[in-house]
Image (tube, rainbow, N blue to C red; front, side):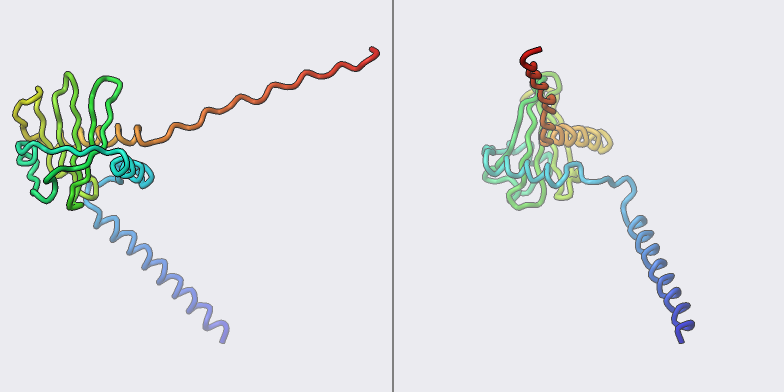
Length: 184
């Protein structure tokens, strides 16, 4: 009886292995081509949302920006709470969750680059992006490939800002001078 159960156990193990392989193949095939991991880790996103919550500022989006990005009133009215920072080159970067939790508004401005605005979905996917080359100039929609590239660059900037710098490694303590023996 023991001999008969051993091949059965092998068949069960083989079936389980085949099932796992099929599930892995299904997951690989069901993932859209070109999809990537989230651009921020959970820890980074948690830090960002904490900054928005505790130190964020309220701002109103101009109607022209909301219209260009295809936003609904419930997403950004009466205002949104954002976190923003100024980089070393004088560029300003901002991030704000929409009021109805359907995604995020991101922007970057710079003295030489104008303004770029992003409508980002809840999974950090690009919905729409636009740019103006000068302050107070009309926005123009960005082509998707260019918008994807710029959004990736913007998330990379945020990831660097949200990653704590490693603690400086302290040098080893200096050896204490040896006491000279008395009487030598």
